[in-house]
Image (cartoon, rainbow, N blue to C red; front, side, top):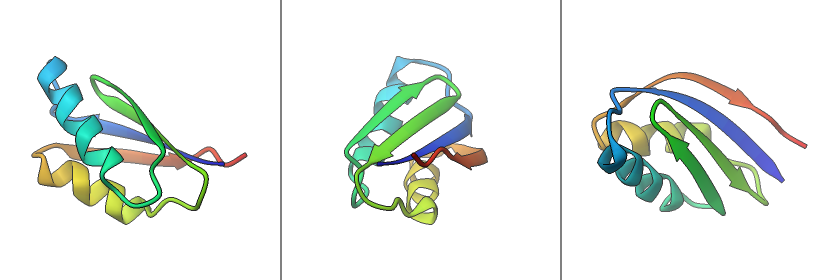
Length: 72
């Protein structure tokens, strides 16, 4: 299992949370995304492409300020 935590700037409401969640789960290999205002924790059974995760968030109009891998 691969897990990535992202800090996200610009989110302010539940609509933001839903938009980011939808964008993240559309990325290849993402099995789930736990999104809260300001952060996301993305899970996959395969290796996650951090650049693709960041691009999907930026396409929604938000900024990724920090990324950390929590591989198990």
